[in-house]
Image (cartoon, rainbow, N blue to C red):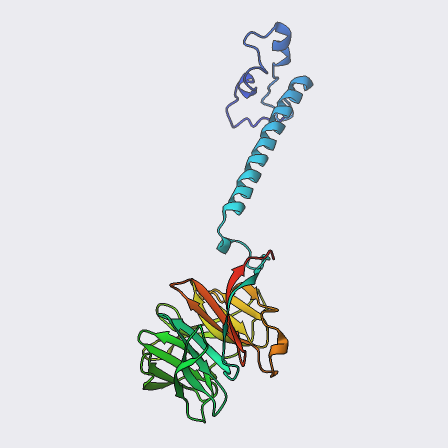
Length: 328
């Protein structure tokens, strides 16, 4: 080892490890072994007996390995404890698909082209479509009998429906026109306009939520009906969900029929991410359906009774169901 003659020279024993590698009273032989030979000439070196250097090297390796393990442990702990937002965005995540159990079957008007379904304060409300047949209805749940009805002018194709306070709000398909009714008398209170098509409609605590058949859900101010924001619904990166139809807001999630399928998507209203699926395959015997357009459409939730209702266009039955979790 070359010694820099511009720096003070420390004692050789100060460079050695503490006990047990150095005795307090070394023998004369050990003292000679541990003696360094110094010189101010750059060519001179300090020589240490190999056995002592081996022990020192082993100690250093143990310390280095311990330090490496500690750093690895801290790194793993940080990654494990990191919130989801700090993890890679493309990390795969399984989405659960629930199935169902039928709790009760109710009669339903087989001529009703169901486009919207709402259960509010003990009453079932329904919006039906088709030009010349569109209507707003209050229906007796137990019998399926229509208790109250308002027929839309023939130029309108009725679509999504939701309640807002003491009012009912109804969309139309391609007219860009919506209607606001008194929930008790069905008297027309006002009309409003929106861009694009109208398919499904629901609401959270502050906004109306509208679907238009695309992966986009629009949030509207319930007073001015102006768009506040929108989300794009997807089931992972690069997987948009098209044909979002009838909507219902349940326990902080948006439930959406996917047109021409037997599935309902459970959607995050904040991110648009599909949180889960509900598979209603086999809910109704297809032999009971007389029209190819008789597909699943219609979701209503009784918040007080915690009851979930579903039906379809031109279906003769309306079902109360219970969701059964199924492993992904």
